[in-house]
Image: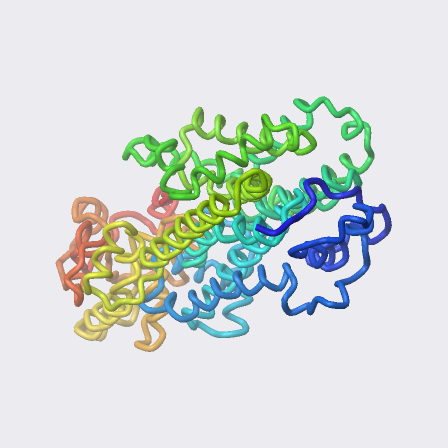
Amino acid sequence: MNHVVERRAPRPCGADALQSPFYFATRFGTLSLMTSRDESKPLADLTNFSGPSPSTSVWSSDLAILIYLAAGTILAQLLCGGRYGFHRDELATLDDARHMAWGYVAYPPITPLFAHISLTLFGTSLIAFRLFAALAQAIAVVLTGLMARDLGGGRGAQLVAAAAAVPFCIASGALMQYVAFDYLFWVLTAYFVVRLLSSEDRRWWAAIGCSIGFGMMAKYTMGFFVIGIVAGVLLIKNRRHLASKWLWIGVGLSVLVFLPNILWQIQHHFISFDFLKHIHERDIRIGRTRDFLPDQLKITLLALPLWLAGLYFYLVAKAGSRFRMLGWMYMVPLVLFVIAKGRGYYMGAAYPMLYAAGSVWGEQRLRSLSRGWAGCVRVLAWTALAADIVLLAAIAIPPAPVNSALWKFASRNNGDLVEELGWPELTQAVAQIRDSLPEQDRARLGILAGNYGEAGAINLYGSQYGLPRAISGINSFWQRGYGNPPPETLIVLGISRGFLERNFASCQIAGHTPNPYGIHNEETSDHPDIYVCRGLRQSWPDFWKDFQYYG
Protein backbone atom coordinates (compact mmCIF):
# COMPACT_ATOMS: atom_id res chain seq x y z
CA MET A 1 0.00 0.00 0.00
CA ASN A 2 1.05 3.60 -0.43
CA HIS A 3 3.22 5.36 2.08
CA VAL A 4 1.07 7.81 4.05
CA VAL A 5 1.11 9.71 7.31
CA GLU A 6 -0.48 8.02 10.27
CA ARG A 7 -2.27 11.11 11.53
CA ARG A 8 -3.36 14.15 9.61
CA ALA A 9 -2.48 17.61 10.84
CA PRO A 10 -5.40 19.63 12.27
CA ARG A 11 -7.34 21.51 9.63
CA PRO A 12 -7.52 25.30 9.74
CA CYS A 13 -10.91 26.57 10.88
CA GLY A 14 -12.75 28.87 8.56
CA ALA A 15 -16.02 29.68 6.93
CA ASP A 16 -15.49 26.85 4.46
CA ALA A 17 -15.46 24.25 7.26
CA LEU A 18 -19.12 23.49 6.63
CA GLN A 19 -18.83 22.91 2.90
CA SER A 20 -19.77 19.60 1.27
CA PRO A 21 -17.61 16.48 1.75
CA PHE A 22 -16.61 16.60 -1.90
CA TYR A 23 -15.28 20.12 -1.44
CA PHE A 24 -13.22 18.96 1.49
CA ALA A 25 -11.99 16.02 -0.54
CA THR A 26 -10.28 18.27 -3.07
CA ARG A 27 -9.53 21.20 -0.73
CA PHE A 28 -7.88 19.40 2.17
CA GLY A 29 -5.71 16.60 0.98
CA THR A 30 -7.33 13.87 -1.06
CA LEU A 31 -4.80 14.68 -3.73
CA SER A 32 -1.90 14.79 -1.29
CA LEU A 33 -1.77 11.06 -0.56
CA MET A 34 0.79 10.03 -3.15
CA THR A 35 2.87 6.92 -3.45
CA SER A 36 5.83 8.69 -1.90
CA ARG A 37 6.68 11.93 -0.12
CA ASP A 38 9.69 14.09 0.48
CA GLU A 39 10.84 13.16 3.98
CA SER A 40 12.47 16.55 4.37
CA LYS A 41 9.19 18.42 4.19
CA PRO A 42 7.22 19.14 7.36
CA LEU A 43 4.13 17.05 7.88
CA ALA A 44 1.86 20.10 7.81
CA ASP A 45 3.18 21.01 4.37
CA LEU A 46 2.14 17.62 3.07
CA THR A 47 -1.43 17.67 4.40
CA ASN A 48 -2.53 21.30 4.24
CA PHE A 49 -2.64 22.77 0.80
CA SER A 50 -5.19 24.26 -1.53
CA GLY A 51 -4.99 22.06 -4.55
CA PRO A 52 -3.45 19.06 -6.26
CA SER A 53 0.24 18.67 -6.85
CA PRO A 54 1.26 20.07 -10.23
CA SER A 55 2.48 16.61 -11.18
CA THR A 56 -0.86 14.97 -10.38
CA SER A 57 -3.86 15.05 -12.66
CA VAL A 58 -7.25 15.54 -11.03
CA TRP A 59 -8.43 12.60 -13.14
CA SER A 60 -6.00 10.24 -11.42
CA SER A 61 -6.38 11.62 -7.90
CA ASP A 62 -7.49 9.50 -4.96
CA LEU A 63 -10.95 11.07 -5.05
CA ALA A 64 -11.25 10.40 -8.76
CA ILE A 65 -10.41 6.72 -8.24
CA LEU A 66 -13.09 6.46 -5.54
CA ILE A 67 -15.61 8.08 -7.85
CA TYR A 68 -14.73 5.66 -10.66
CA LEU A 69 -15.32 2.73 -8.30
CA ALA A 70 -18.64 4.18 -7.18
CA ALA A 71 -19.67 4.91 -10.77
CA GLY A 72 -19.01 1.25 -11.54
CA THR A 73 -21.72 0.25 -9.06
CA ILE A 74 -24.19 2.57 -10.80
CA LEU A 75 -23.25 1.15 -14.19
CA ALA A 76 -23.78 -2.38 -12.90
CA GLN A 77 -27.25 -1.42 -11.63
CA LEU A 78 -28.13 0.22 -14.95
CA LEU A 79 -26.99 -2.79 -16.97
CA CYS A 80 -28.46 -5.56 -14.80
CA GLY A 81 -30.82 -3.98 -12.28
CA GLY A 82 -33.88 -3.62 -14.50
CA ARG A 83 -33.98 -7.13 -15.91
CA TYR A 84 -37.18 -8.37 -14.22
CA GLY A 85 -39.80 -5.97 -12.90
CA PHE A 86 -40.95 -3.78 -10.04
CA HIS A 87 -40.71 -5.37 -6.60
CA ARG A 88 -43.90 -5.37 -4.53
CA ASP A 89 -42.35 -2.87 -2.08
CA GLU A 90 -41.42 -0.59 -4.98
CA LEU A 91 -45.00 -0.68 -6.23
CA ALA A 92 -46.12 0.70 -2.86
CA THR A 93 -43.44 3.41 -2.94
CA LEU A 94 -44.37 4.31 -6.50
CA ASP A 95 -48.02 4.72 -5.54
CA ASP A 96 -47.12 6.79 -2.47
CA ALA A 97 -44.98 8.99 -4.72
CA ARG A 98 -48.17 10.07 -6.50
CA HIS A 99 -49.58 11.32 -3.18
CA MET A 100 -46.87 13.59 -1.78
CA ALA A 101 -47.02 14.13 1.98
CA TRP A 102 -44.77 14.74 4.98
CA GLY A 103 -45.24 11.17 6.11
CA TYR A 104 -46.63 7.76 5.25
CA VAL A 105 -47.77 4.87 7.38
CA ALA A 106 -44.84 2.61 6.51
CA TYR A 107 -41.98 5.13 6.30
CA PRO A 108 -40.97 8.80 6.44
CA PRO A 109 -41.15 10.94 3.26
CA ILE A 110 -37.60 10.89 1.81
CA THR A 111 -37.99 7.73 -0.30
CA PRO A 112 -41.37 8.69 -1.85
CA LEU A 113 -39.89 12.15 -2.52
CA PHE A 114 -37.08 10.73 -4.63
CA ALA A 115 -39.56 8.35 -6.25
CA HIS A 116 -41.72 11.37 -7.14
CA ILE A 117 -38.72 13.15 -8.67
CA SER A 118 -37.94 10.03 -10.69
CA LEU A 119 -41.53 9.78 -11.95
CA THR A 120 -41.49 13.46 -12.89
CA LEU A 121 -38.18 13.22 -14.77
CA PHE A 122 -38.34 9.76 -16.30
CA GLY A 123 -41.90 8.45 -16.07
CA THR A 124 -42.39 4.85 -14.94
CA SER A 125 -39.09 3.51 -16.27
CA LEU A 126 -37.95 0.73 -13.94
CA ILE A 127 -34.23 1.44 -14.37
CA ALA A 128 -34.71 5.18 -13.87
CA PHE A 129 -36.94 4.53 -10.84
CA ARG A 130 -34.04 2.74 -9.15
CA LEU A 131 -31.45 5.32 -10.18
CA PHE A 132 -31.60 7.43 -7.03
CA ALA A 133 -31.18 4.38 -4.79
CA ALA A 134 -28.11 3.35 -6.78
CA LEU A 135 -26.77 6.92 -6.66
CA ALA A 136 -27.24 7.05 -2.87
CA GLN A 137 -25.22 3.88 -2.50
CA ALA A 138 -22.49 5.15 -4.82
CA ILE A 139 -22.12 8.29 -2.70
CA ALA A 140 -21.82 6.06 0.37
CA VAL A 141 -18.96 4.18 -1.30
CA VAL A 142 -17.09 7.45 -1.91
CA LEU A 143 -17.72 8.60 1.66
CA THR A 144 -16.31 5.33 2.99
CA GLY A 145 -13.06 5.96 1.14
CA LEU A 146 -12.98 9.56 2.34
CA MET A 147 -13.36 8.39 5.94
CA ALA A 148 -10.27 6.24 5.48
CA ARG A 149 -8.44 9.27 4.09
CA ASP A 150 -9.38 11.44 7.07
CA LEU A 151 -8.31 8.70 9.46
CA GLY A 152 -4.84 8.90 7.89
CA GLY A 153 -5.08 6.32 5.13
CA GLY A 154 -3.43 6.50 1.74
CA ARG A 155 -4.83 5.54 -1.62
CA GLY A 156 -4.59 1.83 -0.91
CA ALA A 157 -6.47 2.12 2.38
CA GLN A 158 -9.13 4.32 0.80
CA LEU A 159 -9.72 1.84 -2.01
CA VAL A 160 -9.84 -1.14 0.32
CA ALA A 161 -12.41 0.57 2.53
CA ALA A 162 -14.54 1.65 -0.43
CA ALA A 163 -14.35 -1.79 -2.05
CA ALA A 164 -15.45 -3.43 1.20
CA ALA A 165 -18.55 -1.23 1.15
CA VAL A 166 -19.48 -2.13 -2.43
CA PRO A 167 -21.23 -5.52 -1.86
CA PHE A 168 -23.85 -4.22 0.57
CA CYS A 169 -24.27 -1.10 -1.56
CA ILE A 170 -25.02 -3.22 -4.63
CA ALA A 171 -27.58 -5.21 -2.67
CA SER A 172 -29.34 -2.26 -1.04
CA GLY A 173 -29.19 -0.15 -4.21
CA ALA A 174 -30.86 -2.84 -6.31
CA LEU A 175 -34.35 -1.72 -5.26
CA MET A 176 -35.93 1.70 -4.72
CA GLN A 177 -36.48 1.29 -0.98
CA TYR A 178 -35.83 3.32 2.15
CA VAL A 179 -32.88 1.03 2.99
CA ALA A 180 -30.75 2.83 0.40
CA PHE A 181 -31.34 6.31 1.83
CA ASP A 182 -31.14 5.17 5.44
CA TYR A 183 -27.73 3.68 4.60
CA LEU A 184 -26.53 6.89 2.97
CA PHE A 185 -27.40 9.10 5.93
CA TRP A 186 -25.81 6.74 8.47
CA VAL A 187 -22.60 6.79 6.43
CA LEU A 188 -22.80 10.55 5.89
CA THR A 189 -23.29 11.11 9.62
CA ALA A 190 -20.29 8.89 10.42
CA TYR A 191 -18.22 10.82 7.85
CA PHE A 192 -19.10 14.12 9.51
CA VAL A 193 -18.16 12.69 12.91
CA VAL A 194 -14.77 11.67 11.49
CA ARG A 195 -14.34 15.22 10.17
CA LEU A 196 -15.33 16.59 13.58
CA LEU A 197 -12.77 14.48 15.42
CA SER A 198 -9.95 14.86 12.89
CA SER A 199 -10.27 18.64 12.55
CA GLU A 200 -11.42 19.41 16.11
CA ASP A 201 -13.68 21.99 14.50
CA ARG A 202 -16.93 21.73 16.45
CA ARG A 203 -18.89 23.46 13.69
CA TRP A 204 -19.16 19.99 12.16
CA TRP A 205 -21.93 19.36 14.71
CA ALA A 206 -24.19 21.45 12.47
CA ALA A 207 -23.55 19.09 9.56
CA ILE A 208 -24.04 16.07 11.84
CA GLY A 209 -27.37 17.47 13.01
CA CYS A 210 -28.63 18.03 9.47
CA SER A 211 -27.58 14.54 8.43
CA ILE A 212 -29.37 13.02 11.42
CA GLY A 213 -32.52 14.98 10.59
CA PHE A 214 -32.56 13.77 7.00
CA GLY A 215 -31.75 10.26 8.21
CA MET A 216 -34.84 10.33 10.42
CA MET A 217 -36.80 11.45 7.36
CA ALA A 218 -35.55 8.31 5.58
CA LYS A 219 -35.97 5.62 8.25
CA TYR A 220 -36.60 5.76 11.96
CA THR A 221 -33.75 3.35 12.80
CA MET A 222 -31.51 6.42 12.57
CA GLY A 223 -32.64 6.96 16.15
CA PHE A 224 -30.51 4.01 17.27
CA PHE A 225 -27.46 5.59 15.64
CA VAL A 226 -28.23 8.85 17.43
CA ILE A 227 -28.17 7.02 20.77
CA GLY A 228 -24.77 5.65 19.77
CA ILE A 229 -23.53 9.19 19.06
CA VAL A 230 -24.85 10.44 22.42
CA ALA A 231 -23.21 7.51 24.20
CA GLY A 232 -19.96 8.18 22.35
CA VAL A 233 -19.90 11.81 23.47
CA LEU A 234 -20.60 10.87 27.09
CA LEU A 235 -18.23 7.90 27.24
CA ILE A 236 -15.22 9.73 25.84
CA LYS A 237 -15.84 12.34 28.58
CA ASN A 238 -15.11 15.25 26.27
CA ARG A 239 -16.94 18.10 27.95
CA ARG A 240 -15.76 20.53 25.30
CA HIS A 241 -18.36 19.05 22.97
CA LEU A 242 -21.16 19.29 25.52
CA ALA A 243 -20.22 22.89 26.25
CA SER A 244 -20.04 23.83 22.58
CA LYS A 245 -22.87 25.85 21.13
CA TRP A 246 -22.36 24.01 17.85
CA LEU A 247 -23.46 20.70 19.35
CA TRP A 248 -26.74 22.28 20.42
CA ILE A 249 -27.09 24.04 17.08
CA GLY A 250 -26.75 20.58 15.52
CA VAL A 251 -29.45 19.24 17.82
CA GLY A 252 -31.71 22.11 16.83
CA LEU A 253 -31.08 21.56 13.13
CA SER A 254 -31.84 17.84 13.41
CA VAL A 255 -35.17 18.60 15.06
CA LEU A 256 -35.94 21.33 12.52
CA VAL A 257 -35.33 19.01 9.56
CA PHE A 258 -37.38 16.23 11.15
CA LEU A 259 -40.16 18.54 12.40
CA PRO A 260 -42.52 18.23 9.37
CA ASN A 261 -42.74 14.47 9.88
CA ILE A 262 -43.27 14.92 13.62
CA LEU A 263 -46.20 17.24 12.90
CA TRP A 264 -47.58 14.75 10.38
CA GLN A 265 -47.38 11.99 12.97
CA ILE A 266 -49.22 14.16 15.50
CA GLN A 267 -51.96 14.86 12.95
CA HIS A 268 -52.29 11.13 12.22
CA HIS A 269 -52.14 9.98 15.85
CA PHE A 270 -48.62 8.54 15.47
CA ILE A 271 -49.90 5.87 13.13
CA SER A 272 -46.39 4.83 12.12
CA PHE A 273 -45.73 3.64 15.67
CA ASP A 274 -48.72 1.30 15.40
CA PHE A 275 -47.35 0.09 12.07
CA LEU A 276 -43.83 -0.46 13.44
CA LYS A 277 -45.19 -2.29 16.49
CA HIS A 278 -47.20 -4.61 14.25
CA ILE A 279 -44.30 -5.27 11.87
CA HIS A 280 -41.87 -5.85 14.72
CA GLU A 281 -44.19 -8.35 16.41
CA ARG A 282 -44.69 -10.13 13.09
CA ASP A 283 -40.93 -10.32 12.45
CA ILE A 284 -40.34 -11.84 15.88
CA ARG A 285 -43.23 -14.27 15.43
CA ILE A 286 -42.02 -15.63 12.11
CA GLY A 287 -38.36 -15.73 13.17
CA ARG A 288 -36.86 -12.90 11.11
CA THR A 289 -34.99 -11.49 14.11
CA ARG A 290 -33.56 -14.61 15.73
CA ASP A 291 -30.37 -14.64 13.62
CA PHE A 292 -29.40 -11.02 14.18
CA LEU A 293 -25.80 -11.75 15.17
CA PRO A 294 -25.16 -14.44 12.52
CA ASP A 295 -26.64 -12.04 9.99
CA GLN A 296 -23.76 -9.65 10.68
CA LEU A 297 -21.45 -12.25 9.16
CA LYS A 298 -23.70 -12.53 6.10
CA ILE A 299 -23.70 -8.77 5.69
CA THR A 300 -19.92 -8.45 5.80
CA LEU A 301 -18.84 -11.84 4.38
CA LEU A 302 -15.07 -11.99 3.79
CA ALA A 303 -14.65 -8.40 5.00
CA LEU A 304 -15.06 -9.68 8.57
CA PRO A 305 -11.35 -9.32 9.47
CA LEU A 306 -11.40 -5.75 8.10
CA TRP A 307 -14.23 -4.48 10.27
CA LEU A 308 -12.93 -6.32 13.32
CA ALA A 309 -9.63 -4.52 12.78
CA GLY A 310 -11.57 -1.26 12.51
CA LEU A 311 -13.34 -1.91 15.80
CA TYR A 312 -9.97 -2.67 17.41
CA PHE A 313 -8.55 0.56 15.96
CA TYR A 314 -11.36 2.64 17.47
CA LEU A 315 -11.69 0.99 20.87
CA VAL A 316 -8.22 -0.35 21.69
CA ALA A 317 -5.40 0.94 19.49
CA LYS A 318 -3.52 3.99 20.72
CA ALA A 319 -3.47 5.39 17.18
CA GLY A 320 -7.28 5.39 17.17
CA SER A 321 -7.81 7.00 20.57
CA ARG A 322 -8.74 10.27 18.94
CA PHE A 323 -11.64 8.52 17.19
CA ARG A 324 -12.84 6.36 20.11
CA MET A 325 -16.32 7.82 19.77
CA LEU A 326 -16.90 5.93 16.51
CA GLY A 327 -16.33 2.61 18.22
CA TRP A 328 -19.17 3.35 20.61
CA MET A 329 -21.28 4.48 17.67
CA TYR A 330 -21.07 0.89 16.47
CA MET A 331 -21.28 -0.99 19.76
CA VAL A 332 -24.26 0.85 21.26
CA PRO A 333 -26.67 0.35 18.30
CA LEU A 334 -25.49 -3.27 18.03
CA VAL A 335 -26.41 -3.97 21.65
CA LEU A 336 -29.68 -2.05 21.35
CA PHE A 337 -30.73 -4.02 18.27
CA VAL A 338 -29.90 -7.28 20.03
CA ILE A 339 -32.05 -6.27 23.01
CA ALA A 340 -34.87 -4.90 20.86
CA LYS A 341 -34.70 -7.90 18.48
CA GLY A 342 -33.96 -5.97 15.32
CA ARG A 343 -33.41 -7.48 11.90
CA GLY A 344 -29.86 -8.20 10.84
CA TYR A 345 -29.64 -5.71 7.97
CA TYR A 346 -30.42 -2.80 10.31
CA MET A 347 -26.70 -2.67 11.19
CA GLY A 348 -25.50 -2.73 7.59
CA ALA A 349 -24.90 1.02 7.47
CA ALA A 350 -22.61 0.93 10.54
CA TYR A 351 -19.86 -1.07 8.83
CA PRO A 352 -18.39 1.51 6.42
CA MET A 353 -16.88 3.48 9.33
CA LEU A 354 -15.31 0.22 10.54
CA TYR A 355 -14.04 -0.65 7.08
CA ALA A 356 -12.38 2.76 6.91
CA ALA A 357 -10.61 2.30 10.23
CA GLY A 358 -9.70 -1.32 9.50
CA SER A 359 -8.08 -0.38 6.21
CA VAL A 360 -6.00 2.33 7.90
CA TRP A 361 -4.95 -0.03 10.70
CA GLY A 362 -4.05 -2.68 8.12
CA GLU A 363 -2.04 -0.20 6.10
CA GLN A 364 -0.04 0.71 9.20
CA ARG A 365 0.61 -2.95 10.03
CA LEU A 366 1.81 -3.71 6.50
CA ARG A 367 4.70 -1.32 6.93
CA SER A 368 6.21 -3.68 9.49
CA LEU A 369 6.16 -6.63 7.07
CA SER A 370 8.64 -7.53 4.41
CA ARG A 371 7.75 -6.57 0.87
CA GLY A 372 6.94 -10.18 -0.02
CA TRP A 373 4.61 -10.79 2.91
CA ALA A 374 2.97 -7.39 2.46
CA GLY A 375 2.30 -8.25 -1.19
CA CYS A 376 0.73 -11.58 -0.23
CA VAL A 377 -1.56 -9.88 2.26
CA ARG A 378 -2.63 -7.33 -0.33
CA VAL A 379 -3.40 -10.05 -2.89
CA LEU A 380 -5.37 -12.03 -0.31
CA ALA A 381 -7.33 -8.96 0.79
CA TRP A 382 -8.22 -7.89 -2.73
CA THR A 383 -9.16 -11.44 -3.71
CA ALA A 384 -11.55 -11.65 -0.75
CA LEU A 385 -13.12 -8.26 -1.50
CA ALA A 386 -13.48 -9.07 -5.20
CA ALA A 387 -15.14 -12.38 -4.33
CA ASP A 388 -17.63 -10.56 -2.08
CA ILE A 389 -18.48 -8.10 -4.86
CA VAL A 390 -18.98 -10.80 -7.47
CA LEU A 391 -21.08 -12.95 -5.14
CA LEU A 392 -23.38 -10.13 -4.03
CA ALA A 393 -23.79 -8.87 -7.59
CA ALA A 394 -24.72 -12.37 -8.75
CA ILE A 395 -27.34 -12.60 -6.00
CA ALA A 396 -28.72 -9.04 -6.01
CA ILE A 397 -28.64 -8.22 -9.74
CA PRO A 398 -28.04 -11.52 -11.55
CA PRO A 399 -27.39 -10.99 -15.28
CA ALA A 400 -29.48 -14.03 -16.15
CA PRO A 401 -32.95 -14.85 -17.51
CA VAL A 402 -35.67 -16.17 -15.23
CA ASN A 403 -35.32 -19.87 -14.37
CA SER A 404 -31.75 -20.08 -15.64
CA ALA A 405 -29.24 -21.81 -13.36
CA LEU A 406 -27.81 -18.49 -12.13
CA TRP A 407 -31.26 -17.06 -11.53
CA LYS A 408 -32.30 -20.09 -9.50
CA PHE A 409 -29.16 -19.77 -7.39
CA ALA A 410 -29.80 -16.07 -6.88
CA SER A 411 -33.49 -16.49 -6.04
CA ARG A 412 -32.69 -19.14 -3.42
CA ASN A 413 -30.50 -16.59 -1.66
CA ASN A 414 -32.50 -13.47 -2.49
CA GLY A 415 -36.24 -13.84 -2.01
CA ASP A 416 -36.85 -10.38 -3.46
CA LEU A 417 -36.29 -11.63 -7.01
CA VAL A 418 -39.46 -13.75 -7.16
CA GLU A 419 -41.47 -10.77 -5.89
CA GLU A 420 -40.49 -8.80 -9.02
CA LEU A 421 -42.36 -11.13 -11.38
CA GLY A 422 -45.93 -11.45 -12.57
CA TRP A 423 -47.40 -8.01 -11.88
CA PRO A 424 -48.29 -7.05 -15.48
CA GLU A 425 -49.84 -10.49 -16.00
CA LEU A 426 -51.87 -10.15 -12.80
CA THR A 427 -53.23 -6.79 -13.97
CA GLN A 428 -54.11 -8.28 -17.35
CA ALA A 429 -55.99 -11.13 -15.63
CA VAL A 430 -58.03 -8.60 -13.64
CA ALA A 431 -58.83 -6.72 -16.85
CA GLN A 432 -60.03 -9.94 -18.48
CA ILE A 433 -62.33 -10.63 -15.51
CA ARG A 434 -63.67 -7.08 -15.78
CA ASP A 435 -64.39 -7.58 -19.47
CA SER A 436 -66.34 -10.77 -18.72
CA LEU A 437 -68.75 -9.00 -16.35
CA PRO A 438 -72.23 -7.76 -17.40
CA GLU A 439 -72.51 -4.09 -18.30
CA GLN A 440 -74.44 -3.23 -15.11
CA ASP A 441 -71.60 -4.65 -12.96
CA ARG A 442 -68.96 -2.64 -14.78
CA ALA A 443 -70.82 0.63 -14.18
CA ARG A 444 -69.95 0.73 -10.45
CA LEU A 445 -66.94 -1.57 -10.40
CA GLY A 446 -64.16 -1.50 -7.82
CA ILE A 447 -60.95 -3.49 -7.38
CA LEU A 448 -60.22 -4.49 -3.80
CA ALA A 449 -56.60 -5.57 -3.20
CA GLY A 450 -55.32 -7.34 -0.12
CA ASN A 451 -51.73 -6.11 -0.23
CA TYR A 452 -49.79 -3.12 -1.49
CA GLY A 453 -48.13 -5.08 -4.28
CA GLU A 454 -51.47 -5.93 -5.85
CA ALA A 455 -52.86 -2.43 -5.33
CA GLY A 456 -49.70 -0.80 -6.67
CA ALA A 457 -49.63 -3.08 -9.72
CA ILE A 458 -53.26 -2.33 -10.61
CA ASN A 459 -52.64 1.39 -10.23
CA LEU A 460 -49.47 1.23 -12.33
CA TYR A 461 -50.52 -1.05 -15.18
CA GLY A 462 -54.30 -0.77 -15.01
CA SER A 463 -54.63 2.48 -16.93
CA GLN A 464 -53.78 0.76 -20.22
CA TYR A 465 -56.84 -1.44 -19.72
CA GLY A 466 -59.11 1.30 -18.40
CA LEU A 467 -59.28 -0.26 -14.93
CA PRO A 468 -60.36 1.81 -11.92
CA ARG A 469 -57.74 2.51 -9.29
CA ALA A 470 -57.44 -0.22 -6.69
CA ILE A 471 -58.54 0.30 -3.10
CA SER A 472 -57.03 -1.46 -0.10
CA GLY A 473 -56.99 -1.36 3.68
CA ILE A 474 -53.23 -1.72 3.94
CA ASN A 475 -50.89 1.04 5.14
CA SER A 476 -51.35 4.40 3.37
CA PHE A 477 -53.80 2.94 0.83
CA TRP A 478 -56.44 2.85 3.58
CA GLN A 479 -56.11 6.60 4.11
CA ARG A 480 -57.07 7.22 0.47
CA GLY A 481 -60.49 5.71 1.00
CA TYR A 482 -62.81 3.69 -1.22
CA GLY A 483 -63.94 6.28 -3.73
CA ASN A 484 -67.06 8.32 -4.30
CA PRO A 485 -69.48 6.89 -5.17
CA PRO A 486 -68.44 3.63 -3.51
CA PRO A 487 -68.30 0.52 -5.70
CA GLU A 488 -71.15 -2.00 -5.83
CA THR A 489 -69.35 -4.87 -7.58
CA LEU A 490 -65.80 -5.76 -6.60
CA ILE A 491 -63.01 -7.76 -8.17
CA VAL A 492 -61.10 -8.96 -5.12
CA LEU A 493 -57.57 -10.34 -4.97
CA GLY A 494 -55.30 -11.22 -2.08
CA ILE A 495 -58.06 -11.65 0.53
CA SER A 496 -59.22 -14.93 2.05
CA ARG A 497 -62.53 -16.48 1.03
CA GLY A 498 -63.63 -16.70 4.66
CA PHE A 499 -63.34 -12.95 5.14
CA LEU A 500 -65.19 -12.26 1.90
CA GLU A 501 -68.07 -14.59 2.74
CA ARG A 502 -68.52 -12.89 6.12
CA ASN A 503 -68.68 -9.42 4.58
CA PHE A 504 -70.39 -9.87 1.17
CA ALA A 505 -73.70 -11.39 0.16
CA SER A 506 -72.10 -13.32 -2.72
CA CYS A 507 -68.56 -14.13 -3.87
CA GLN A 508 -67.47 -16.39 -6.71
CA ILE A 509 -64.03 -17.37 -7.96
CA ALA A 510 -63.59 -15.59 -11.28
CA GLY A 511 -59.96 -16.35 -12.07
CA HIS A 512 -56.54 -17.18 -10.73
CA THR A 513 -53.23 -15.41 -10.29
CA PRO A 514 -51.19 -16.06 -13.46
CA ASN A 515 -47.88 -17.83 -13.04
CA PRO A 516 -46.15 -17.55 -16.43
CA TYR A 517 -42.73 -18.41 -14.98
CA GLY A 518 -43.80 -21.31 -12.80
CA ILE A 519 -42.35 -19.68 -9.68
CA HIS A 520 -43.47 -19.65 -6.06
CA ASN A 521 -44.01 -16.23 -4.53
CA GLU A 522 -46.56 -14.56 -2.29
CA GLU A 523 -49.12 -14.15 -5.07
CA THR A 524 -48.94 -17.62 -6.57
CA SER A 525 -48.62 -19.51 -3.28
CA ASP A 526 -50.57 -17.61 -0.61
CA HIS A 527 -53.64 -16.29 -2.42
CA PRO A 528 -53.94 -17.54 -5.99
CA ASP A 529 -57.71 -17.01 -6.36
CA ILE A 530 -59.41 -13.88 -7.70
CA TYR A 531 -63.05 -13.27 -6.75
CA VAL A 532 -66.01 -11.21 -7.87
CA CYS A 533 -68.07 -10.07 -4.88
CA ARG A 534 -71.38 -8.23 -4.57
CA GLY A 535 -73.60 -6.96 -1.79
CA LEU A 536 -71.49 -5.54 1.04
CA ARG A 537 -73.32 -6.52 4.23
CA GLN A 538 -72.75 -3.18 6.00
CA SER A 539 -72.30 0.42 4.96
CA TRP A 540 -69.02 1.35 3.33
CA PRO A 541 -68.05 3.81 6.12
CA ASP A 542 -68.60 1.11 8.78
CA PHE A 543 -66.75 -1.51 6.75
CA TRP A 544 -63.84 0.79 5.98
CA LYS A 545 -63.47 1.93 9.57
CA ASP A 546 -62.55 -1.62 10.63
CA PHE A 547 -60.70 -2.59 7.45
CA GLN A 548 -57.41 -0.86 8.28
CA TYR A 549 -54.38 -3.13 8.67
CA TYR A 550 -50.60 -3.13 8.24
CA GLY A 551 -48.11 -5.08 6.22
